[in-house]
Length: 412
Image 1 (cartoon, rainbow, N blue to C red):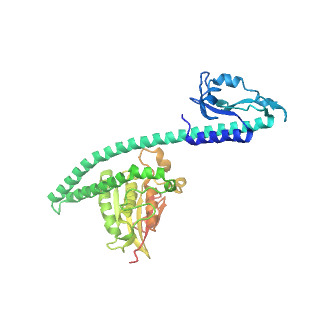
Image 2 (cartoon, rainbow, N blue to C red):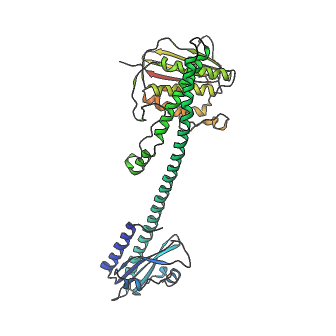
């Protein structure tokens, strides 16, 4: 691996120190070509004084083994004041690996033992600097390879997104045609409307996904260290960043009721019972429509996913003082107490990680982040909490899970 210009500049400065402060008439720094220990390793000069062909010619033909064998024993430095040979050949060594030499000499007088110790310090400095230089270059090379792999992955994702868009467009078209052809009283019209609505949602998610994998933003983060800690936008909340989202007056009914329609179709297929208690009027809340839709959709999807056939999912909304609460409860497997505290951590699935139900452990973490940005809160209870049940006369089973989302009423 080639040396950097910074390391070569350091070598020149150390040679200047030998020349100006210690009177060296010749100094050459060599490195091996491969920086590995080998009997055939060849030494290449990277800095010399005087910077002429004559200076290099005097020591350019050294072979690494021969040079090492000719070194005086470092452990047997004579007492202070006793002189040493006029030429010093010191190894550049790190962790028993010799990867270069420092050769220096002077014509007018031998080196004292103190002077030799100073030259050894210079050799140690060059050794450490060379190791750090090589590691820095290795890290830079690894980062370039990583960016290259990211670019390849970006191309693959671009291709997949492009292939998804065509069938999605066809699905939306078929949904529109079904809605037009079916009469208003036809029960299948609601199913067709749900297909159209979910295809619209998929299209929004694909647009967000397309923006999230844009490598231009990754390159900016890599080039500007001040942006490394910048959070990545959360996916599906429309015009949304993790630090600030636009809050507007939102109708919980308008967001929740279409989600319930879709959930009922899924519940029917899985053999589940959905019961709801949603007032005809709830005061507007301060929220982001896309973010709130994502939160409630995730909670309902989880309730359907983790409730076995024959179970129940209860969805309830009510108004308490300056808040609107939305409860999503199920009679499913429940959550062990040891998992409750970490349930909203990214990628944490607890006992579910060992089950057969697929998941990423991201949905609840995203939900809590979005709710907090809307100045609300989200809580989980397992087993079920009475407040999450529809009828206070009927005690809920001693199992299952309840999530409650608290939203602030809009003050406008």
